[in-house]
Image 1 (cartoon, rainbow, N blue to C red):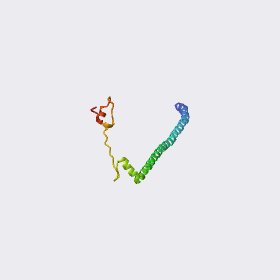
Image 2: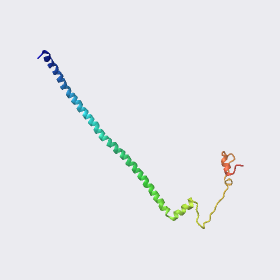
Image 3: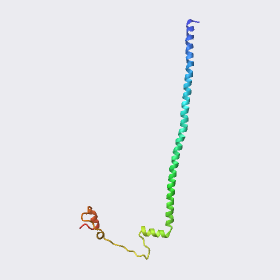
Length: 138
């Protein structure tokens, strides 16, 4: 052996021991990294279904409100349909809302001149109303 090779052996020995000492640190960091990544993955797996569940609950609540409103509207329309089949109700609606009369009824029509019924004060601020009532010349 040459003197140089003898000197190299002790120099390489501390390097190997440093490598062996550094491996547990690297392993500990890798294990820690795996644990952190696993925790983040587990959180993601649990968080996304929870958000979906909340979204579905909101959709169900909205659908229930809509269903309740539509059922109330359906009940109201059902009573209107029942009323539309009753001849007494149909006649009352025809007389009140459509101003229809039966054959043989006496129809009275009142022709009233608004100028004769309504008297505006002399200092009325809106001249258009006086004109519409026919009081424009007063």
